[in-house]
Image 1: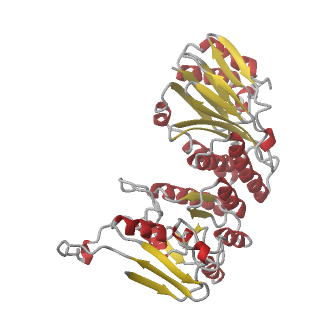
Image 2: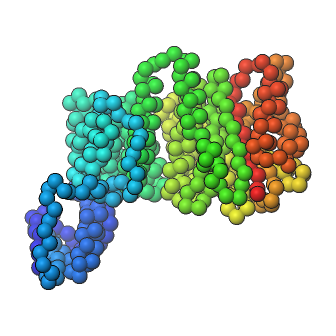
Image 3: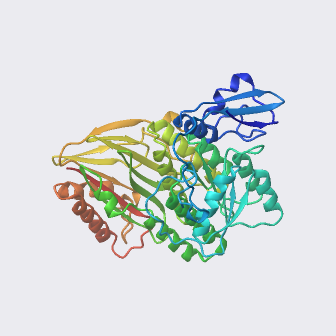
Length: 487
């Protein structure tokens, strides 16, 4: 029997069994006085059991604990251990990074970017530091929120913060709120990294002032991409460039986040053609086509107004939708409520009067499940055109703090050859030199004349007709179109 003893606070008798469960502690708060077990005791118990042993704990509150385990004696000859130089480079903790076979090729740091990494688990912290250092980032480590705040007060000026949530004495949420008392959201970006993956955790983190929220295990490339994205956003604000340059950057970011042709071609059973062209003044149009665990989700939205703020809000929405999908949220009411909370509080923090219309379409087994308020969805079946109104399926995102009562869903069955068209008002409200609007009626007529063509040909026909209508007139709003055709 091997015994490990401590003289700590001890564990109550009714907690002795639960202490071996993941992320358990005798004191139940996230901001506990002492560190919890995390995954350590859970993994230890599994390892001991795999070797045919047993593990248990004996404890007296106020005096300390004794962790005891047994292991059978090996009857095989001694195995020589590898030399220190032969130690493998495999990741230390799978709960920090997800397993990946390819080495990251992302171009990241330039040797000058400082990242403050905060985690009460030293091994987790070292794994993060090792990975980021390989990509030329300077990593400053802090083992608690209190230590991190002290570093900032002493003059440390990191470019970005990676912050764990479950830490002793002061949670990541509390640290985040304290940081936001001094630093604006675009001045010092912060990403929360945690195993807490409930929708409520995501909302709490973003509401506390975090720029982003990643759940462990984290993809190495995704972490690098998120860091790079938020550093780029911060850089754009800090440089205080001319408005024309800001708008050009926003246009570029919108284009970067669009799904690729390769992604669209991987959706089985559907032809998909997407188009998005930013306006001269940049609006906040958004569309995406996402796959996760066999689920296919289409999204299209339009942020009110123009300019960098509208484009930035569209990027926030895209990132949050991807996070909610990755967390397997399927209930449209919960999905839209969580998204609305993020937008509502970020709009307040940005001090801009922004909201957006947004429609989400789940596609499964030739059925579309439509929810959210946006422009009317156009459906063509055997040449017959139908308009599906979304006014009763949702509420503008970010306009009110609670929209749960407004969210509904309708089902639209599809047969082979059926066409579905989603669009933003940049098409229907586009104007020619005589101030005449293109209009929904003209859009429907073009679709009706071309519905037997491929999705790509339908999209091209609409865009060509819109451009012909606009002529030399300045484009005042983003033009976005998404065409689906059931195979």
